[in-house]
Image 1 (cartoon, rainbow, N blue to C red):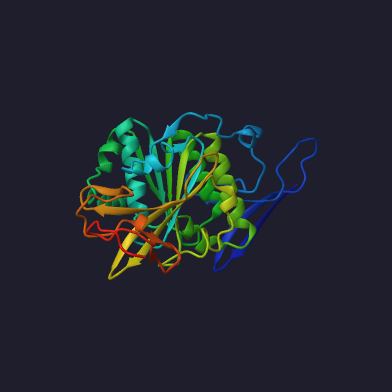
Image 2 (cartoon, rainbow, N blue to C red):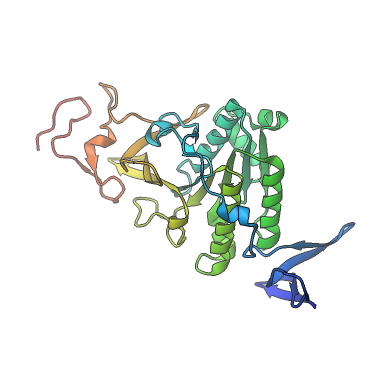
Amino acid sequence: MIRLRMEDMARATVRSIEIVKSRGHDFQMGRHTFRIVNGHGMEVYRRVQARRPESRDRAAAYDTDTRVSTGIPGLDEITNGGYFLGSTTVVAGISGVGKSVMACMYVAEGMRRGERSLMLSLDEQVPQIMRNAKTIGIDLQAGIDQGLVRLHYDPPQEIEVDRHFHDIERIVEEFRPTRVVFDSISTYGSNLGTTGRIFRDFFHALIALMKEQQTATVYNHEQPEMLGMSSMMGSFAMSSLVDNIILMNWIELGDMFRLGLTVAKMRANATTRTTHECKIVNGKGMRVLPRQLPVGSFQLPFSGYQGLISRSPTRSPGSASPDGRERPE
C-alpha cells in the first residue's frame, strides 16, 4: 500500500510518498519527498532521517596519519598539520571575519596539491564566489577547467531538505572530493530551524556521508556576536557532533579592530586554545601572525593581552609595550 500526500510547509507545498505496507519485503518507513519532473516523470528523494547503508554507519576517520592542509599560512602549525581525513570542522564567526576567504584558500590548496575540492553554497552564487576568490589571487576557473574544483549553488528559499540532501549525495559520490566546504550552515538553520529534529537529522546525515567518503569537510557558521563569544555555536546545538571548532573574532584594542583566531576544539589532537592574530591582505589572502611580532612593530602582540575573546581585553601584567620596553605592573 502506497500513500501520496500534498503537504504544506510554511507557504510552500511539498509532495510526499509513504509506503504503508509491502508484504514480504523490508522497506523504509516514513514520508519521503517526491517531484514530478518534465521529461522524467516522478523522482523520489529518500527522507534524510531514513536508515542508510551499514557501511555508512560504520565509517569513521580510520586514517590516523594523513592530514589535509588548511592552506592558511600559520594555521597548519597550530592545528598539528591540518585536518584529518574524514573529519568535520566548523569555522565560526560574525560576517566579515574571513570565513569565506579561508574556504577559498582551503580549496586553492587542494588545487595546488592536485586534490579535488567541492564548495557548496547557499549564500553566494558561483560567479560571485569566483569574483571574490580573484581578489585574494585565487583563480577557481583554472581548478574547474582541470577537473579539481566544483562549485555548487542551491538557492535557500523554501529548501526541500530531502531533495537537497539527495543532490549533495549524488555530487559527492560522483565527484569524490578530498575537501568539501559548506558556506554556510547558518543559512540551513534559518530555513530549517535550529531547535527541532529536521536540522539536526540533516546535519547528522551530512557528517555520516562525508565520513563514508573520507572527505575533510569545513562548515562555515555565522556567529551573531561581533565582539567576544558567549558560546561556540549559539543556538546550533551541534558542537558535540563536530571534530574541530575554529573561532574567528573581532577584538577591539584601542581604536582598532584586530582579527583573532582560536582553535577551540580539535578532537584527538592536543591544542593550546591560544588566540592568534590574523591578517587578510589583498591579493594574498589570510595568514596567522606569529605570537611575537617583529621588534619595532607599533602594535603589542596578542600574547601581551588577556581576555581577548571576553569583550574586555586588558594588558597582561608585565607585558612589553610596542617599543619593546617592559611596562611596569
